[in-house]
Image 1 (cartoon, rainbow, N blue to C red):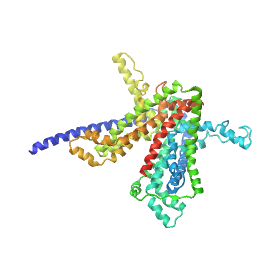
Image 2 (cartoon, rainbow, N blue to C red; image 1 turned 90 degrees about the horizontal axis):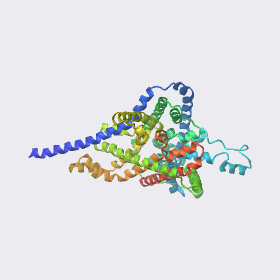
Image 3 (cartoon, helix red, strand yellow; image 1 turned 180 degrees about the vertical axis):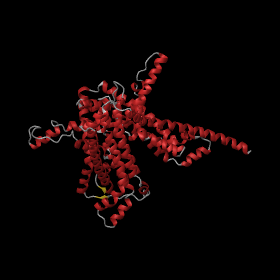
Image 4 (cartoon, helix red, strand yellow; image 1 turned 30 degrees about the vertical axis):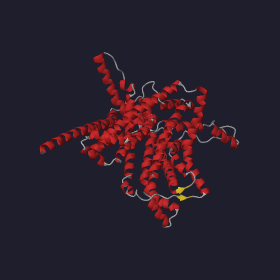
Length: 558
């Protein structure tokens, strides 16, 4: 009898093991897919540049290092000031319009950095209507008599990137203010501390890890930027990689610069991890009672609203309004061109296919870690998300090397067996670009799906297993249906990020293949910003939707 009872149990265990092993193997494949560009980058850098490295070292890299450092320091200071002050404003004080500001402060996230640069370049042109109006008010006749400082400068680049990237700090810091510091702030007030003293001595020190997380995300975005930096005249490491590869045709040299840049990213991630080393402490206070904001009077309330609305005005209202006006002008003048429609179709199809692949890979990676907990699956999950820390330019170089080698192998095999050439099959079909999207944005899907899985009690897994379901059956019957909201949110965010992505798309897109982002870049490179206004407006409008959803989720959680 005991033999009869044990036999089915052994069979079930074997079936569960085989099912779990398939998830593990798939997770290993995905981690290898993401790790391959990093290894290829190392291999390519070791090949040595074709005599141009001394030139780069003497004339290019010192300037690139200096300007990248200045840009990161400037953007870091600005996003810290804007993100922390606005987060404290809408958390600690109650005033007319506070509810509106809570989500409106996130809107600049919908504007890609290159779009805000193009918009302000046109708006603040010396013969544009802004400077013309100022000269008319002051009584000057021409730009020779009076003109504002040129926006094409390091200061201009820092200002514009700062007003677009501060929401990363605002998001993390506001969440911190809403939870951990509430009780301590209330106690400090009852002990007689003034508002300023409470902020500087209590709230700000407790929020430092959250601020560091937000600043590191903003700095990685600034480091990854190529469109805004190039058009504002700032020669960063990203711009140097692009020009070394495309202009000088020196892939090993570009790979070497990319490795230097990757070390900078690793340093930023290390700093962020170091800042979060005490997160367990402030998370333990999360159940404290909610924060009670201080009610301001009418005059001070209006002043607070105006102060909080300023970043939204500069980072979203002005560029979005400008794009809407210019897009309407172009639409009335030329209508929608067939070229724009085909580029929109390219963008949607490419982003949709990449999103589906990213969601599939994200599900496999997150569920392997959930169903087979241990050091191996945890390490595989970390490797699978490393691509998000790599700038698009760096990732593109790492992907080009193995994909080009695979293309050559396929072409050689086709010639030998079929007598016909396939050419650059993977690069020419856009598969390499899809690969870049998967490696770059897989972390978003894994993080969102993992958060969705964490809300499903482990007892559900145990109940399904005790009823005879294997790992795959438990996923199909339990985890997949209950994770639909997180899957939808992840898909939305990934789709918008794919649609906005510029550096990797510029470097890996097939010949004569344009997306909305590359169309915008091309028009801006020719100085005809108004030609791309409809494409830019489409990117901003689509990007606004997930930002609003994100704001609503944040309000619900708070």
